[in-house]
Image (spheres, rainbow, N blue to C red):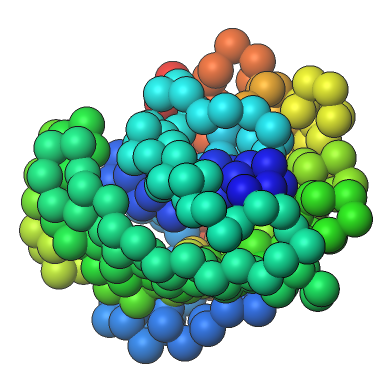
Length: 325
């Protein structure tokens, strides 16, 4: 089997797993955005930002940003073997690639590839997968079906489809899209579980770093039945190929089921270091109805300055320094 396709699998099959499990801990780019919108059941009016709801709205919008642009996943070079630090369910994904290596008919990328197989979970369940690769165009696609697949105490259930395009000459990924319609997960930290509906797409530079990521996704909390919509999130990256550090600009619309929606912009680019989306500087601005706003400024010591303009006069009369959102 070609090292290219092995690296492709190592890099991208875990993406939706890591994203799903990140969502458990937290509060359109070529895919089917209807998967998200048709599953949102909350308020669709623009929120009026107040002193009472500003922290909750800011935390929800920012948590969505952490999920959508998780650099520890999409910034992982395809030549890096996954570890428990950057891919929490990498053991199961590595088992997939190992099983594909044993397919005697798969020798190199000069041959088209079509593989179907099943893998057991570390602590129960299994997942089935199908992968197809066109060696001429570099286009690939596949499907996954999780059946109570358990890895390190985290359980996944439901389907996901993926597709994308690779450059056969440079053996690098140009685009990757993941669609999920009812992909659910549980973890020790979130035993009641969540379910995801939506799509996400990444495009990459020649250095195999993310160039742009888009996300349109609804997260349903099974304990409450409430849905949260990360709508038209777009992340534009400018990262150093040696350190993976650089800046991220974010735009999008966040829907809270009770408060309504707010728009998100980045007046000052967010600085990120290494392989995690934890800004050390920069500003996120969230705008609600009647000109109301909440602003998050990030600092290198891990604290945040939350400011609010609750009367829409352009002045941020409320300020509060936070250690966590």
